[in-house]
Image 1 (spheres, rainbow, N blue to C red):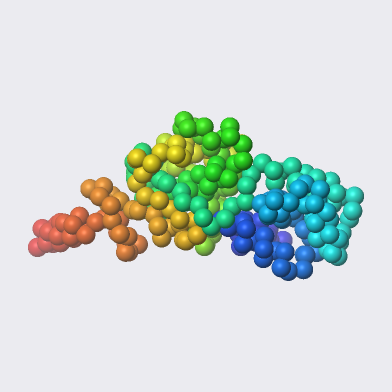
Image 2: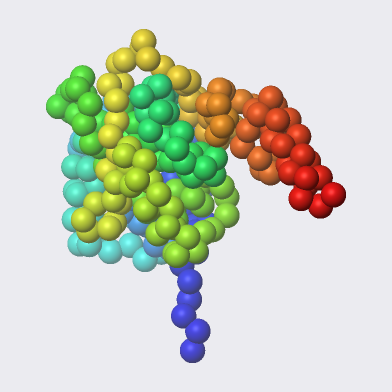
Length: 260
């Protein structure tokens, strides 16, 4: 019997960047047969963002769950209570986030290939966004420290590239990230810790990512040879125009010297 591989196209493995639009879409449709705990948290955050009190939000959640075919009042009341507590810890993510990436962070990640660099910056941006949505003032201290990226490499790769990656390649990518010094896996192996710079630092910014647009399209890439910023036009090479022309000439020179 063949083992069923996990699907990385489901909502459980999708990183939601605009929770407001996602919640509005969920509420505009009839409830599913099974309402996940994450859905309850998302709807709770949506109503809290509108200014509703806890009792009112609980009543609305019960009404939403009551219209589900497999509604169980005892189990759902406990799940709703836990979802309300979780929803109070973070604010609702919308598409108005502008995430800065500093030159110090870019310097550590420039040692990676462009594919690894893009995934690493994607993880860094998501982790910073999770930090910004935290309601508690304790999580907004100015000093640099590790923050937790609660997704595995396979989930991050799927959401960034819109295609899957094998477990072997994901593990190899995780090792390369560890060598860069910015990202390191946790001891449990269920996520990554990222050394995040001060989010209020406006002096040492390399580029800013707008969450409402494609993250990978906004990442500034750098030439692997001279380190200057480049506009990545091709997947065939990771060099600026000047270094690429010099490399082509050197390759032609070596070919003629070795064959003629």
